[in-house]
Length: 208
Ligand code: GAR
Image 1 (cartoon, rainbow, N blue to C red):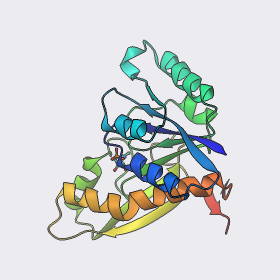
Image 2 (image 1 turned 120 degrees about the vertical axis):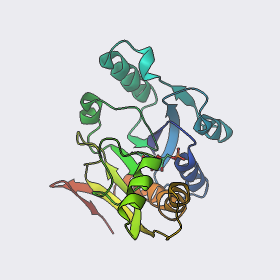
Image 3 (image 1 turned 60 degrees about the vertical axis):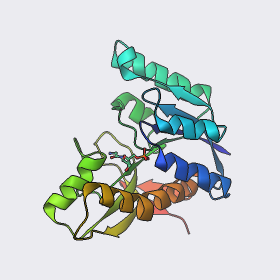
Image 4 (image 1 turned 90 degrees about the vertical axis):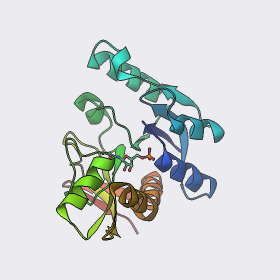
């Protein structure tokens, strides 16, 4: 069984999708070993506790340097023997040092079809605001491996979602979560845990 750490900063609906998938036996070969939040009091922590999953809180500002924070994060991950890190709405910047240490072992969910509406400054509702401002008719979500380029790592899964004419950022966000994020994130995690993902020349190959 691979051990998974889910890193969160907010409501944790993607975490909930992973918990539900795990309960339904849909995370084959892996289990959520801990949830790490970037601040105390976020609802994601409650979701984890209700599911009996150990929680940790690591607040960047409480560490004088990035190196101190990195050491705390790596120390926590190693204490739980983590094999796979899942960023599920995690809003603290992760250093290149940690990213390199977990090359092809860290995945992120992003609420657009990368390479649209991604990179620095594109997170949460802002992504959907930008999609509506551009007037795209289709958006979606992407699960990708994390590398040193913000939202630039090898793409694992994507799912498209229609934009409706009367959408607000909030209604679009909700539809993208329901129709795409909550589906492809557990799928990608399960594929990873079954050893079905290979990265070759920055492209992800999925074994049948
Ligand atoms: C999700 O929509 C996720 O895709 C997004 O934050 C939200 C977290 O919601 N992540 C990013 O924008 C990363 N760039 P949740 O806490 O309910 O899972």
